[in-house]
Image 1: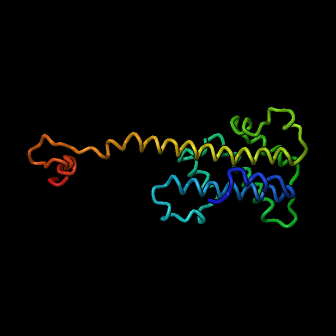
Image 2: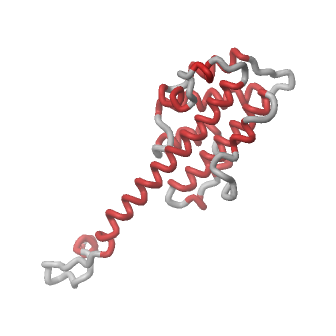
Image 3: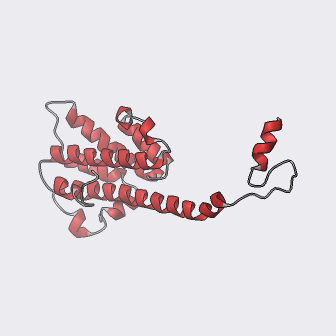
Length: 187
């Protein structure tokens, strides 16, 4: 994914059958979740996100602010659709699956999928699903970008604090040493 263009996933979502659409959409969402979780946990090299289930990744993403709580049901519905087709040879998707997915969308995801626009909402099956999956990926991207901006702002604000030299008023604590650390030595 590091070499991908920001909208490379659109080519995958615009090709193939409904089965392929759900499988590829799920793969893109899961890859994004892993990418974002790797960026927000302090020591990503100590975590094998491949061992986590999709719902666990969603929960962690929501807990870290990449996803909003109201968005989670739609992402879980994509997982349910993926499981429906991935584990049964005779499985098929239909327009009723699309309706169920749309019914799970939060107002934010509905807005991002442009479902209030008749030219989108009235498209034939499975085009609305394409719009929904694209919106879900873009919402993940936006959540991640927001977190990165907040992280950078936090670094910018705390950098002067990290570089500050503490001058102690306590004669037992040498200049530049932490009075807090000195207090813990005596305990």
